[in-house]
Image (tube, rainbow over all chains, first blue to last red; front, side):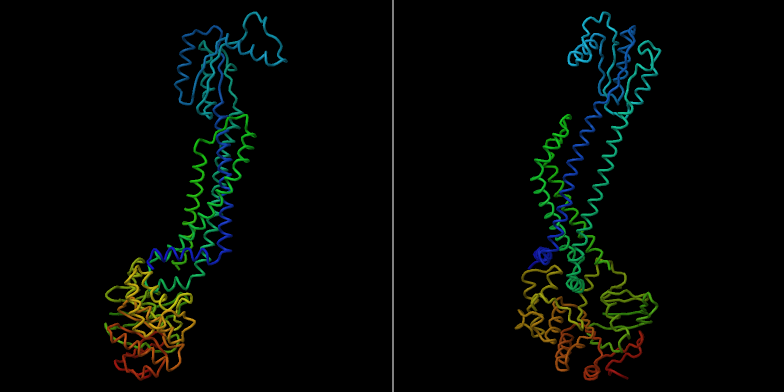
Length: 300
Length: 226
């Protein structure tokens, strides 16, 4: 038997020596990873929904009827140069009236507006934002333009600070909450693996003592335990992925139905990324947890 | 081969296990370490394999200051200093052969070296025929011989035996002592910590007597008691 064969055999022996303990640990890790996978999917869905809503945030600046075209174009160009702005559209008085007519045709309560006479609607600049959080600043800058012949009064700049604030709060809560839940799951999974390997180390403390006495290196002593931790991790990861894939269809369908007003997309390779992420996470946490256990034993 | 210079070992509770020890053991010597329980024999053994560090003084083994060794070099020291204990410390799920070969495998040897060196060590202790037996199927003497073979298979420069006959009957005790003498004749420095006056008196080898952590007697061809 060579050193490599010893490490492999000892790792498998350690894993299979106490099937109940190894099985319970693997299943606990699997449960954590299933929760993690569903959490990642939900979080990604909500984040992408929030991002979609953020991209809908816009400002409207109603223009004075007597505003000169050159001044309007100048203002539009200046707004477009702002890095927080995604797009600026000019809506003429005629376009605005056309929109109102279309709206009234679809809404019985508005009544017909065919014989409206003089068009009372103002032209406007509709500003789509790349950074929703800049909405307030941009609105203030536009209000500062009042009196220069393009925007007549401060109320002609319409933003929606409450909606923007609420959206930003939701996005922030999702990000921080997501990180907190991830950290909690990481800790629980790590805790399970650390304890599993601690029990394995305790069961083989005589063997470890002899290895130390005959001059085995710490690295060789630790290797079977680290491998055993990785076995628990990868076993848990495989079970978690199987459960996740079996349940993903119905859950995703209901999630999309729930959010069908929003064209939420999780990305083209999301499932492959998720599978790779879960297995990689399982391996890392298995090796990390086992290292903590065996290193703390060897340091005594 | 082994030098202790002004070595003291004090535990955190204030008890001194060893005090002001000066001792030099040449390569190839056979030394008995005698004294009552608690005299410091086992502590001295543990200092040699760096299971303990001296509180003050220097412990030098084969030219290396044991306390100054980095953690990574401790295994190399332990390959030079084989140890045998009163309770054998054999792995019950491994056969005699596996227990001995284990030392070679976990120190990075493989294949033919493991087979040849294990067979050589087992033949030296006279256990080649019992190689496939488990420790529970062996007598106490055979178990101790297995432990000695495991220590010898690394071809150490020093063999430290801590009460190696403490659990054995008088006849088996003599078998083990004769084996240790033979190991010494083959060139290994042997240090035996023992309570057994009969074997010390019969062999008339160097005797280092410890009492309350101090060396009170060091004689070339000594007896158990002065």
